[in-house]
Length: 221
Image (cartoon, rainbow, N blue to C red; front, side, top):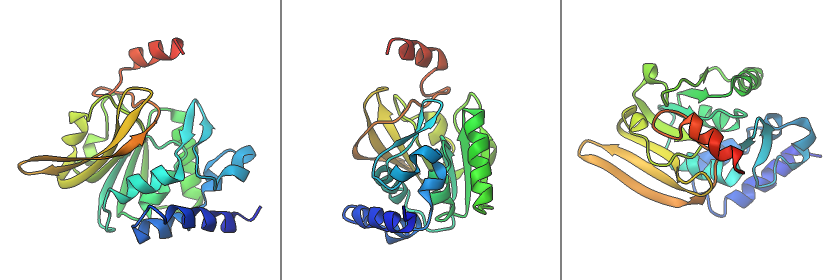
C-alpha cells in the first residue's frame, strides 16, 4: 500500500477536529507504520489503536493529536513523556519541542523504541526504563508532561516535576474508563480542564497504580 497517501488521508480526517496546524503537519510526516508490527502495517493509518506486544498499544491517532495539541508546544520546551511504548508519540513530541525525556517500564519496549527513533534520526530524545517513582526527577522541571497511561488521580509526583506555567495531559479514572485531563501549573494553584473520555492501559508506579494491585486486577479479567 502507499503509506504516504494513507497518512495524508488520516491527517485530513483529523483536521476536522484538530486545529493546531503544527501538530497536523508533524503527523503528516511521522511514519506511523514504522512503529507497529510488520503484520499490522496495513492498518497503521486507520484511526484506531493497535497492539505492539507486551499487552501494550500504540494510541489512536486522534488521541495522539488531541493530547499533543493540548500541550501547547512552541518548539522551546523540555517535555516528559510517561509510557514510551512504540515511540510514535515520542517522535511527534520531538518535532514540536526542544528536548524529550521519555520513560517506559517494559525494558524490551524501551529498547525497541530507542532503536526505531535512532534509525529515524531523532537526536533530541532520551528514552529511559522507568523507575518505581513516576517521571524522571533528575531532568525536572519540565515545561510539559504527557502520560500515555491512565492514573486513578493526577499524581502529585508529576505535578511537582512541572514548571510554573507548564502543562500536563494525563488520563485519569479507573483502569477501564478514564477522562483526559489537562492541568496547568500556576503560581497560585492549578488550572484543570477536561478534554473528554478515553481508555488507556494503567500507569504503574508510586502515585498511580501499584504493581501488586495491577497484577491482581489483571488476574480477574
